[in-house]
Length: 271
Image: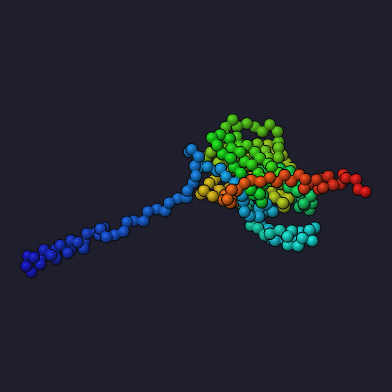
């Protein structure tokens, strides 16, 4: 083997032993995360939002069913099937409270505060089949609901005890990282969780968590505590969807006039 041949073989061996980088494509970059709109240094929750699901009928698992008292409406008045939004599937009632729920169900719809156009309370206002608006600035946050023109202020500073029990309670808020966490106390015992008679007492505390997972979706959670009604604390969770309709507006649904016959019809003198 001459000197030239030996050199060429040595060079080829060196090339084969060396890592090949010049012709390799660049390593793929990590996928970009979701776009989270921000207001100063916090997520921006401004917008019109709405839940999509059947929690407003019943928080727990339920089959489709008809409403015998509205048989003339056929399928229009039927209840759609739905999956539970309760962690663990079932609300942990104490025995007496469970009996109260069955009493509520037996009297529906007249016993339902929604039928009477009362403000829905928290968390029910969040997942009714009506949109709501969040108005966020530098300080307190305003929630405005379409149903019954209900609203509430979330106090982000100057937290106080509720001065009196009320339909929408008293909301004190804080930031935990990028999550908006709201503690709602001072709730009266007149609101329900859904149309299926699920209820609570005056000791209820609701801790809400709003997490913006991208620009058009919020992951919503609410933890319910009420030792007079439930064996333990329990939680619901569901996504909320931004309404992206062109020129979307929150419209009025002042429903008192639709409830007057239900509320006062038995007081009207019949001819």
